[in-house]
Structure formats: structure tokens, C-alpha cells
Image (cartoon, rainbow, N blue to C red; front, side, top):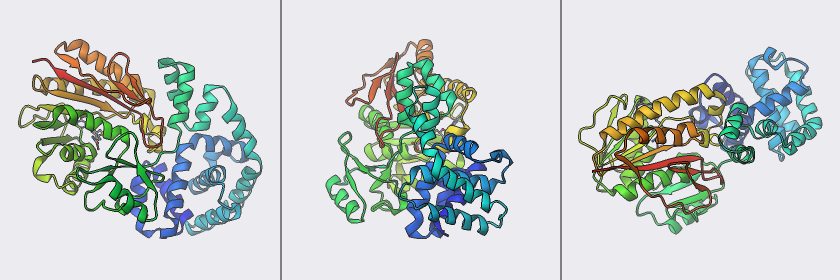
Length: 439
Ligand SMILES: C[S@@+](CC[C@H](N)C(=O)[O-])C[C@H]1O[C@@H](n2cnc3c(N)ncnc32)[C@H](O)[C@@H]1O
């Protein structure tokens, strides 16, 4: 499959409710190897600033985008994003490729329209984009950087307008992969191996077991992935599990929302003496987590249970709990851009209610003297500080543990926890609060 045809197919799947990473994974081996990077870049740059491309489309297309057949509208969105972001892409190659992809899909009605709109956008849209970029209005900044207007407005209420603008730019930034090295993997040796594969990676100055890359390679293509040497993971996420492991050191760990097991794998790897019970609502995610734990060679120490963490009962009282709570994911919108267009203020409130219940449950299950890490990849106070403050207010037996904030992007939460600002392509927005229960 050629690159533009694949990009159109993946973007179409996302418009129907799918996730870009899963849609890409499904057809990855059908895409010509030389086109794979282009496909990922094009799909993600289209999704990242979807509302901006829609605004451009409204401005330069005579027909209402809503009245266009889905394939035509999708091709136009990809074409506009490609014109604006992939400067090295020669216009006729982009337009002809999209036209061919539309022909292959059997829908030839709007080929002339796609051609005309994309040429007009290439000739005329630069001034419009520049005016938004230079605008001092938060609404224009949100449109330019691809952040939902309601989210920017919420940040301006929770923070200040200047801080909200800073956050909007940071969340709209392109992200790159960092790689967590497993215990015993020598970093310099791994970097040599990684770079010998034709890529570029270097040591993170922030975490000694992290390697930063200048790309978003497909995980299974990473040197040493099959052998369990590395895991693609943002440094904020690494930091969260590392924080708990630094206090817990071993014993019985309960991972209440293990998802696909990224942090479960990290905890098992960093604490070889720990036994972990890992729960998640989704059977599908548990299956992925099982695979992850096998890859980390820790399957004999991790037990999985699928079900609601509000009701499941652990086999033993946990010495430490990781509650990596379900959230809006707003700190990772740069990495998973489709999710920001599906989120709403009402959903944030619902998340807050569930997060409070989950944290209450975690507090009730924790052994006295044990440690509890509450974390989210959200940048909304309603999912972070407000949840922790509410639960701590009702549970005087909970105390916050000190947290070393050794980077400029780590800020003290108000009043509790640490907010990680998404300041770098390897650092997602994150929130952590490490608590203990009085004996
Ligand atoms: C932030 S993700 C966890 C990511 C995971 N810890 C990792 O590092 O890969 C939150 C998870 O919570 C799960 N979840 C949501 N509601 C839940 C509930 N009531 N009980 C258990 N798990 C739940 C979701 O399925 C999702 O996998």
C-alpha cells in the first residue's frame, strides 16, 4: 500500500472512532517500508491540529465540509495538514497521491475539487495561519496549536491567561519517544546499538535509565524490544513508577488500573523482590499487559484480575498501591491527539467522580504504613489536586510523602502532589501524589 492511501485509510478509521496507533498497527506490514515514516507523520499532524485544518477548509472550500463525502473531506484534511506542515513535500506529489488514493477507494466524484482546494490552500493560507500564530487571543492560540477551546478556557480559569497560553503551546508540541531501559541494560552500549540501526538516540539528562530519540519508531522495530531490553514510555510515566518503587522497594504491590501494563512491567523490573497483583476493567488491556510482563520476564511474580477496581478484593493486604487512574489524558494529547477531540468538560467532571471513588478505595485497601501513588496523565486540576485534596480531607490517616522536584518542569501541586509540565517532547503532562497511611 502506498503512503497516502494508507494515511487516508488510517485517518478514516479514526474518524469512525478508532485509535490511530491501532489502525496503523493493523496495516503496518502492508505499507511500503520507505513510506511508513511519512504515513505516521501525516496522520498525526492531521489529527494534532484537526480544528485548524477544518478552519482552513471552511475558508478555502466553496462547499460546506459537512456536505462533502467522507473520503473527500478526509483527503482534504490530510492534504491541508501536509501542505502546512511537511514543507519538503512537493505539492504535485501530495495532490496526485491523494487523488490516486481517492480513485483507488472508488469515489471519483470530487477529484477536481480536491485538486482546486489544495492548490488554493498552498497559494493563500500562509497569511491566515501566520495571523493566528501571532494573535494574542487565547482562542486563536488554541486554534493554532490544536487545543480544544473549552480546555484552553478551563486552564485560563485554573491558572492565569499567560500560563494557559504556555500550556496550549506545550500541549500542541510534537512529541518523540523516549525508551526505558530495563534493569541491567548498559545505557551507552544500548545507544551504540540503537544508533547503529540508522537512528539517533542519546542519554536523557533527567533519568539515568532513559534514552531519548528524535523520532517515533514502531516499538517492535526497536533493537532489543523482543528481548525485553527497552520499552517506549514517556519520561513522566517512568518517573511516576520510579517514585513508587523508590519508597516501596518490594513486598506486595497492587496496581489498581494496570491498562496495557507499561508501569506494571516497570515496577516488576525495578523491584525484583516484589509480587504484584494487577487489575483492570478491560480484558483486552489485561491481555496486552500479560504479554508485557512476559516480555519483562516477570510473569511468575505478577497476577492479573479483570474487573472493577471499586469491587475487586486483593489476595493480600498491599504494602504499596499504584493508582494510575483513568483520566482525560490531556497531558498526552500531543502523543494521542484523537483523544482531545473526544473529550468534554462534562467528561472531566465524571472522571473526577470516578477518580475520587478509586482513591478512596485505594486508601481503604492500603496497609497502614504503606505507600499509595495516585497518578494521572492529566493537566486538569479537577482530575488531580482537587481529587487528592478531597480524599485527604476525608481521610486524616493519609499523609503526603516528600517528592524531590529536580527539574524545572516539575511544579508543586496546589495544595498536594507534583504537576509535570509537558515542556519537552519526551516529557508528557503528568500528575503524581505519593501518600502514606498512618500506622
Ligand atoms: C491511565 S490507564 C492505565 C495505564 C497503565 N497503568 C500503564 O502504565 O500502562 C487507566 C486504566 O484504568 C482502567 N479503568 C478504568 N476504570 C476502571 C475501573 N473502575 N476499575 C479498574 N480499571 C479501570 C482503564 O481500562 C485503563 O486501562
